[in-house]
Length: 378
Image 1 (tube, helix red, strand yellow):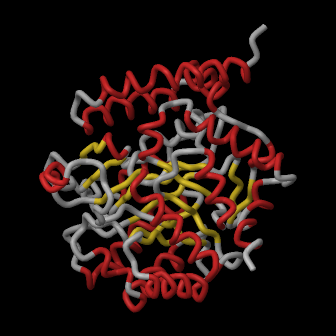
Image 2 (tube, rainbow, N blue to C red):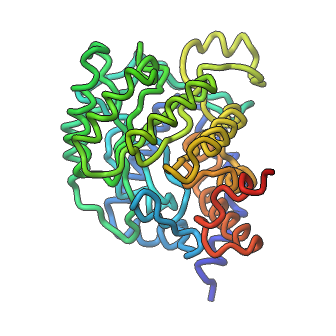
């Protein structure tokens, strides 16, 4: 009889062959239309047990060596879904079933927000990347809170983080109250809260990464919730600013830092310059940001590793890259663009590979491997 493990191995092989063909078909349609279709299908997986149980049987990897407890929260596997995919908190029951170890919903703002005019999401297949200027399109904190109140059905339940940002129409000098509103509504319903001050698609938002502006926002969110609070930073910060945010996170007793968001940089792309210029403004994600994201991770770990958690996100596509991030000091990983280009069996493949690396290295758990490469540095 075919075991679930063997069946998954067969499906991985099929995924490697079939998914690139499916991706070409999907890329014939506008990105947001395909996103909506996929989101509806995933939401159905999370809501209907006849779908959820067989999907989880195949895709949800439960190797005990991958379990970890980070900032007081239990994660079954280290790779979570980054913010940006589930903008409404409408599919929180799906992410564990398809293999994620956690998921961030949002970014959610205090008020309902339609986002920027379409088109606002663009594919760069030659770079295995995306550019987006979505503009925090979301139903607002009140509606997202209602979605989070829905029963989280099994068979797999994973931690859900609420990623909160500033409403576009709210002036910068009123940002504290806006963040406080979202935190107060979503914090009691989430396992952790991530303060997003690093999206390039809300005017002035990145200015809030300056320590003097960031301190009162983070303090206000911390005072509003009883769950771990993290801050998400941009890859485009200069090193001194990364150090300043890291020191502030330790000073305030934050649970951790999510590094990094999308980039405004366009260096080294294979996509023709004229095509990139035609796309215009927006945040770049995917393979091109991998090197900078890794560099920021290493700097953060050298600065505050062991004091607060570091969640590494940006350009992770392979087992080698995921393992490198763990060894460089990442307590947890997040993906988004790699999931789009990798397909439904990609997560299982990454987690299986990480488990093999841990056993080959003699580690008892993934937590034991965090920062192992940094520890070997003279």
